[in-house]
Image (cartoon, rainbow, N blue to C red):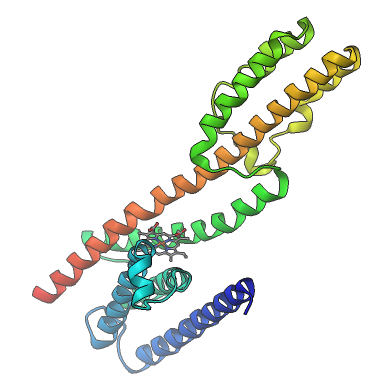
Length: 277
Ligand code: HEM
């Protein structure tokens, strides 16, 4: 099968498996409230709690699987893509099971409040991550002409700055003036700008108005230098767009991963506390 098609079939299968599990959980919970009480510590509630814990632990295995490519392919431990799907759908299902475990009531103790808040946070931040992972590459590809690795951005900007400085050395006063007023400050460092979330070009058209104006009053040799300067400036603005959006993805990881690790520790603590007392 074509790799893309295979990936699509896989994600559609996981999608329907997820909804089938949600419906099964709903039916189970309905039977539960009809025949018994919805409480965390009766056999029904404990089963939901155990299932939620297993799904959370299973979700966490994804991070190990991602780093163990060789062992996983040697022992056929499943593809990273399948583990990611389990991570996303299994993790989401764990929220429903947690809510069933506590009978759709708010928690009463300190530890259980923390567990509740962290579960909701990790799952919602996970969903935000899925959205960002789909949306960011799409808008970067839609409006920009270059692809770039985040780590290389500062070094590429430094190169642009050097090239631009050299170029303006032999330019006449109008171009040098434009450079020192409008371009040089922008070439100093990568800049985070909110505008890239709504307009991936960063308002390029209005930023190029000065260039347009100068082009009309310069001779052909200066115009050619101005064009080269404009190309460097536009590349810098594209690098800023990459910098802003790729940084968002990195910051998102900080919002998702550390709380998820705290959650796992607290879940283990909670299970041990229930087990021993
Ligand atoms: C209890 C449940 C969860 C835990 C413990 C957890 C934990 C983690 C950890 C540790 C990572 C970092 C993986 C790595 O880079 O090695 C991660 C990544 C991620 N998580 Fe979760 N997560 C959970 C639930 C979810 C849910 C419900 C979603 C989505 C609905 C989600 C979406 C993601 C995404 C998109 C990534 C980035 C995947 C990648 O690019 O490799 N997570 N999670």
